[in-house]
Image 1 (cartoon, helix red, strand yellow):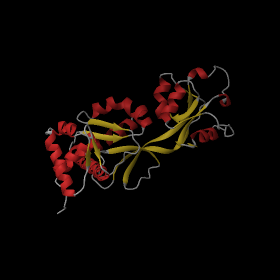
Image 2 (tube, rainbow, N blue to C red):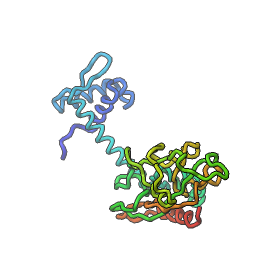
Image 3 (cartoon, rainbow, N blue to C red):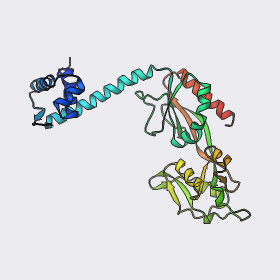
Length: 296
């Protein structure tokens, strides 16, 4: 058996640490102020160490109290997450997906009506935080990832390979005037803080314009921001055709030169490889494949 103080006393002390007040802690815990003070005093007696310094209008944690408070916060937070995960995993009607921001906005969001119609019994949760991963404790059911499909310990199904085209706002192109890319501002997507993706250079090479100087221009850390900048007439962008097709159809963007280049990376459906695929994930996979097969 672990030799620990009473759990109730530790929980009371954690709330006291949050509020720095016996009175406010008592209100949160629905206890009397004297009961809260007594629990903290009992905890101090058990540890043989002062945890709080009692001032007239507030409390101050001692170094030992601050150390214990930080540890209890982490411990209770971990327990809370575990309990929530257990409860959420039992919810068979909620599908939790993590999706890259541009794919979420430009491809998935316009199709959510179709998804709801196809899977009316599912509630959908979508997150775009790239750090959200399919760990054992994660609430995620599946994810859509952009890359080369090499993610260890995960099962990956290719969904959509990028087809790069150059686009800009229509009013930047003069009718009957040959297109001179050197007069445009180039819009770049950053792979990291100081490195751009090579999509522009690959497109220019395919167009026979490999000597074009692209060192200037504007840089953004999301493709979606590059697309928005292009729509606002700030310059010319290279983007995946599937992401900008609706904007071209609506007249917000137009293609610059008839050049299309297959990207080196793709969008993938990613699931856990070591567990059976839940029915709701199978249903989502089927809907994705039907949407893509239909060319929508």
